[in-house]
Length: 169
Image 1: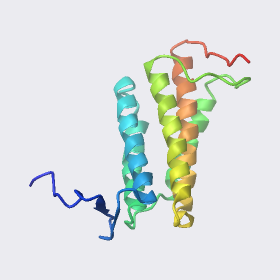
Image 2 (image 1 turned 120 degrees about the vertical axis):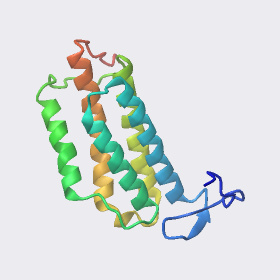
Image 3 (image 1 turned 90 degrees about the horizontal axis):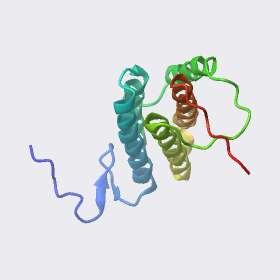
Image 4 (image 1 turned 180 degrees about the vertical axis):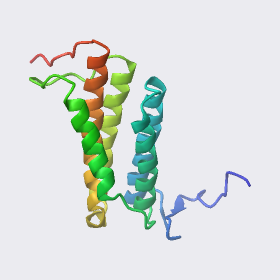
């Protein structure tokens, strides 16, 4: 099977429903951003190969992308609860946050911060879509993902015995 179909050569693509839309459609932007986040999570996995949470997150991001493309797949309450549990577990380890910190640190910390910012952009892209009211769990999930990546960055930094760089006004 050839990887290229030539069906998108004139700026159109198909949603999961078969509907043809412009490649500039807001839904395409949203699931393209989900795909970008998934790729960066894969990059983060290179730095944290023992972190099975990231593999699970990548699978949920594929689910999310399918949902945004019009498939009947959705993010369920259990997925949101799982992310929240992981956040809470890491929060128990890291010291309380007392100031704004700069998104810096070692390679893994920096990649986690990149994932956090892409998750925030994904949330904005989803909210820009006309049908975002159908994605309530999906929006909560993406919002929690950005929190997860922030806490993961702090956790990795703490576990590597590195200090966080505080924002100096």
